[in-house]
Length: 315
Image 1 (cartoon, helix red, strand yellow):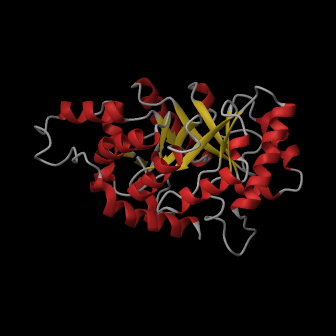
Image 2 (tube, one colour; image 1 turned 90 degrees about the horizontal axis):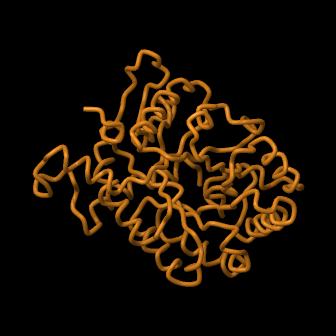
Image 3 (tube, one colour; image 1 turned 90 degrees about the vertical axis):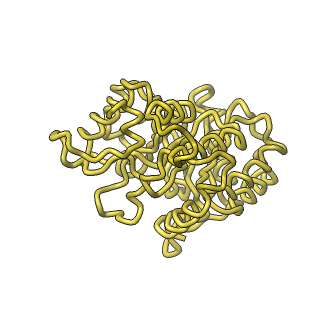
């Protein structure tokens, strides 16, 4: 399934599931006194200071502005950025290091097909000396196009074990590895994690790896909770993608669904997907984005979602 089709399904599922949590929407008239102070407090109590960003040089200065505002407001601590052929020799967004943001680097799925993955890991480590956390692939069994190479979870675990062994042997204490998160909707992701446990995940030290989940829906959250309540109790957990594809629902999603994720999955971090997802080229998925029109910078008239306005203290 392509990334576009997966996120389209997620978007539809989210619309149906956002109201399924026990908490009521912060935007509903009966919930609060409609005080802006109540909204700000509710968002800040639930918000996790992490975002997914796409490494696009076209909007570098726009990124610099909005990321700086978020950092200065105390609303941002780290970002997740992909590492692929376009930025293998260094992040194009130098602002990440300039602001002292904690970067999670996602090793692109296509790298995992290379016959000498160990050499590729060495290269990535050399070119990204400030990154400590590396996610090894992302939804690899579901988002790769059928016209290209595909990978089963069994094949993935063979590669991940090679990466794990190589890092522990040659780069001790250099990096913490995150397993690839499964698809963020439905229950198939939980079954994949169960299969990864059968294939040797539990043989890897909880001091050396972090279990990561993409989680957009209640069904996915419940499935992953059942997995975590079992044999993965000793492992750290990060939610590496979540969000809702309607900017009118961003605030209520943080208030309700972030609380549910925290209760169900005990994550140390929750990453919102995504800060910026394009100005029209992705049309159907721009509802996830917290900002738009970054190419208009430096006129400072780029669009900011209601959630971002709360996070940066903008009236």
